[in-house]
Amino acid sequence: MSTAVGIKVEEHFHNAEQQRETAKLGMWVFLLTELLLFSGLFVSALVIRVLHPDSVTAVALHLKFWIGATNTAILIVSSFCMSGAIESSRLGLRRPMIFCMLATAGLGVLFLMLKGYEYDRDYVEHMTPFLSFRRYELVGDPASRLFTDLYFVITGLHAIHLTIGIGIMLVMSWLASRPHFLERHQNRIEITGLYWHFIDLIWMIVFPTLYLLNR
Amino acid sequence: MPPELIRQLRTPFLTMLTLLALLGINVVLGIFFITGDMWIAEVAIAAAMVATVIVVAMEAHKEPPLIRLFAGLGFFWVAILFTLTMIDYATR
Image (cartoon, rainbow over all chains, first blue to last red; front, side, top):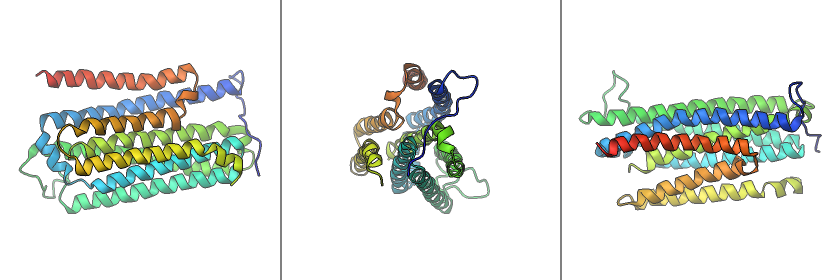
């Protein structure tokens, strides 16, 4: 059963449309700063690749290509679930919307579990040069430390963003389960969706940058 | 599932299939074609995936001009970052 959909207009906005556009613009500006944050890391990876191609290839051969590819597919499906939540919210379908948001969060958790498994394999295979108490597998190749450390920084930063996204998704699911949510705050689902799609987008750059191009 | 929702989900579903297909192509290239200039195709496919997410999934094409401007500005600054940095390293 569908419910009414809308936005409670705050006093400093002329109308709901202006409030909706302002919220979206604010989110896009925030995502722009996030893009620049990650881009600094991507350009660092490219510079290391140009300066030390053999060292980077040696590290890339230790990365779990299939886990990276599977995680990309998981995030693509999660983005579809998020789109499902947004479309449901536009139609005032509360139950499908909450189901889609929980599915999105679940796929995010699955991504983190696979990432955790990959980190565990890295630890077992002595690919953690930042741990001073542990032997490093490519100890004879100092330049490889740079790329391995950068791999952990980039994927770790992405994992932090994903964890925040999962948290937001769960909170929004809880808020959306309350009556009259869609009548007053439908645009919050769309804003949340923008953030989730962005996390997906960043991983689409991380996967080729770390796993694909350096093999 | 209400038919109206199924109708609305057609575009997101096709987007997902497109992205999975592009990922599949990149994975195949990464496994079987690891030498030569294949990286150009891999980067082009990744760029196509990013553009698909921004334009279709994030619905940038439906947004007003100001929002589209900010969405484009992000990548404009990224382009400046990459270009200036790589000009430095490529000409040393």
